Length: 436
Image (cartoon, rainbow, N blue to C red; front, side):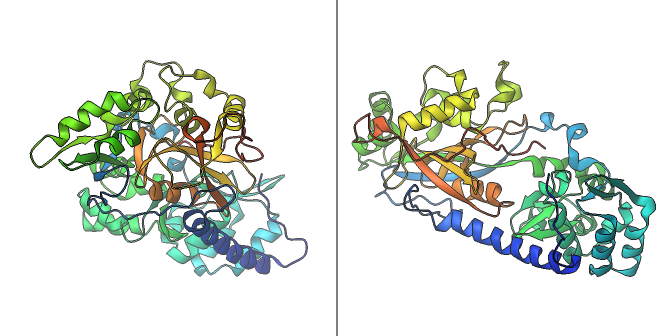
């Protein structure tokens, strides 16, 4: 588990230095992952904005039209299993004396400090101290104090609420609440529970939030926070479109002849025609996109994660061996190489942490869209996301990491026996997105 080290410096000095270092490292890690992709193993590519306007026709994927949808299945939300719904519990991996010194030096109001120092709310464990703070104290913390305390708590696996809070884009939290119809007083109450981490607006105390707003408002709020930032994407084919190029791009994996008649038919429509890219995806992705595991009559559905999804993308017969991390590792080494140019349809986009572990895989589609499944949670669908949304989601709590793009050898001009792909040192230990 995570522990603080206080052997050489006073508590307050260690905390301040550690907090500043963590912020710097997180900011650097996100920036590095998004804009400074390493040349030896990573393909560099641009991340575009949220505009739904078509991209340039010079791109091999053609003209795309995208619309964001908040994808959620309300029937799958299980609050009883949600660790963020419980009463607040704060675990500090330090001694009693160290915790007292920290609380005394923290920038807290006198009443808050007094209640948190009241050891009637404490439990002492062999590996640290646990505080059960009164909900009134949690609610009255100002955003700066909450951010400082929660950044410390987030370092321990015993604080799941702070380690994996709900995150919202800066400046968008209030907009989202207004869009789902919450009243002004409800928005103000929820904003009191938020704090900033790596520029994202975070909320960790879902159980307290439920008590602050009306029941039907909380139901709307739940659907909002459980929704995946998914996109519907359409390909527009014009009379003068290069059908050969489009078919070669979207028909990768031996499907060019299957989709060429459809593309030609769209080009023959006066003024051009458009179609969802779902119709152009391989069968595995086409059948699953926008669905949830609970809708599948499949005993393995609750184990099918990002890696299983990515490795099966082109498969006509689903390979359940990709539920085994060792099979994934062997296949990556044997059948894939680092991409040396722009990502293209079907490439694997892998996120790797500082210890060499692959913690997420997705499949590049076009522009900055990927096909993905975010972990094994039953509330997470197979979906199409923007790459930058995925990077924000997965790098938010990480101090370092990198992005790798791998391509199947059969889609390259290199011999099959070429040296294997540069794979992280420990890819078999997939670190999946925590279930909420």
